[in-house]
Every structure is written in C-alpha cells, then in structure tokens.
Amino acid sequence: STATANVTLVAGVKQSIPSDGWILLSANRNTGVSGTASGRSIEETRREILTRNNPTWSTETPTGTATAYIYTPLDKTVFWVYPPADSSGNKVEVTYSRAPVAIASEATAIMVNDIYESVLLDYMPHRGLQKARL
Image (cartoon, rainbow, N blue to C red):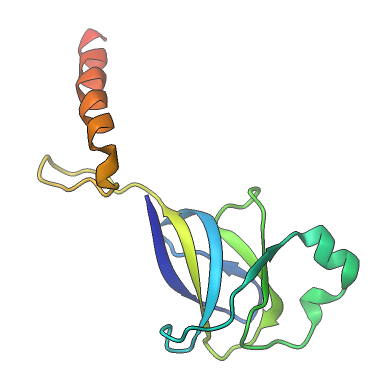
C-alpha cells in the first residue's frame, strides 16, 4: 500500500523515508518546517547527470529547500536531496510504499486499498487449501 508523509530533512544530502516504508515512490514538494506549507516541487534526477554538471554538488552550501532528489533501487529506503539540506528542520512530502503490518487476529484490518478485496477473497482460500495439503 502507498502512503504520503512529511519527512524532516537531516543536515546533508542523504535522507531516509519513514520507518514503516520499504521503497520510495517519489519526493513531491517542500512543505516547510510546519509540514503544511505548499512549497516548491522537487524534481527527480539521476546522480550521473547531477555529477556531470556539478561534481561538487554534495558539498555545496546547505539550504532549507530541496530542488531535486536522487533515488536508486539499490537502497530503497534512502534518497538524496540537492542542494544539501541545512539543519533548520524543513520537511519534504514523500510518497512511499508501506511495509505490510503483521496480522495478529481475524479482527485486524488489512491495510490495503479496497480494490484488492476480490483478489484477497480468491487468494486466502487458495492459500489455506495449499497449506492443508502439505
């Protein structure tokens, strides 16, 4: 399932998605210190392009507003911002995929979109029958 949340930028270029996430889908916009401001959009770029045009991009003067981000599937919970973030506590809005929550009982709600109801209804009996045959 997907979620959208504000991430407080830490000083520097390397940032992390929320702890319940397992993959970044996009970094959308700056939302200020409050997390409610509708700030500048953030554009995805590739590390090779940024490095080719500005080899010292990661050591530039930190600011509170990200203009670009880099993501690589090699480390799914991390992204890098440009220019480097300062320590002012500014936030960016990210969309990410949440890791599934363990189901403790039948009363626990499954946190997926309702569009998947029919798929789950088909899968659960199939999976139960497969386990019964083992």
